[in-house]
Image (cartoon, rainbow over all chains, first blue to last red; front, side, top):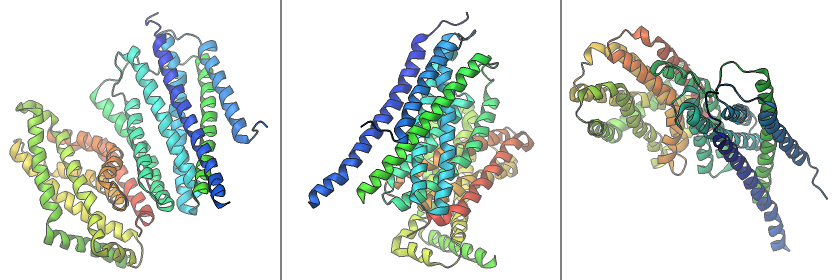
Length: 47
Length: 220
Length: 226
């Protein structure tokens, strides 16, 4: 064994990546709900 | 009623593949001899960079298709792919930096691969900033398509210039993040993760394109 | 073909006349270059060795920063007095306008670069006369690359809000290869080594120029609009 294990670095890399992808995924979900809600509001106003 | 649209099924598939990738990277693949367990960052780093390049190719094709057809669907595809490319490039840079700290002893080094990744990251952030600055959808699509084509054509030019520049100024690192000979089991684990990331990319891209279409319909 | 060249030349001539009568760009850019020269000196200190080691990079940093000021403005002049509409109404292939504007940019940038080079020669005490021919080759190849992309982006960002920020943010990362190649080649030239040592860099520049010019010619019609 030449190098120590450095598990904390591995965990940090995977965690940050998961946070980035998860954050983007949630951001998409929010945008989807907002877009789906908008025509409904317009219909309400028309009625 | 559970949502059974192809998009949701694709999402589950991508999630399962990512779990399989984690299993392959941490359970199946052996501990690397020289770098130890920190080498397992590779199963994140390499698939992320490959996915980012795939995304930029999609942006190129969609941009050219938009200029040819003037159909806004192509523009939504180009925009979504560029956004995901920037996301995955960001993950590549982060994981490369975290990998570099224990192996090179520094968070950042002007290694050829890291440098060209960083340059391309900036190029495509510029693409996204341009999109954010133009209001009219049709004009934004045209401008973005031109930049999307130019940015993709620039990729090989950036690659070679940075490679030669590095070769000129510093000897290549012996203990790089990419170990030279790769064991077959490591290769297999890498392959599983590449497939998982590709699925994740396709899922997020279809999602992103659909959201953009919904937003345009809502705005109309 | 002749009509195409004529249309391009008319655009160039028009810009030349505007610039010669107003001298708005050239004066400011040359003055800006002079300030840059002082800033470089202050940033690096009086050590001559250090300055000379950094010289190729500083030189191109000066060219690029001065180019940013000049390039951004070439389409902005068209926004006054509805000149933009006039250009749009011009008959024939739109890419002729690109060629004309590119030529105007090249003339402007070459003039500024000549002034910067002369200033560098005087203030930093380098003998430019001995390396003038190989240096000119590097400068011309690099300038074409910057101007080809800069003209395209200039037409784009002239129509966009926050253009002062967007133009450099788009152009600078795109021009990293040109900067790397020209700085490396200039290093070879200023060291007095034969230009053949920089052959790989010159090839890269030539390829980059060709790619940028081709894309500029093909896509300009999509960028230049009302």
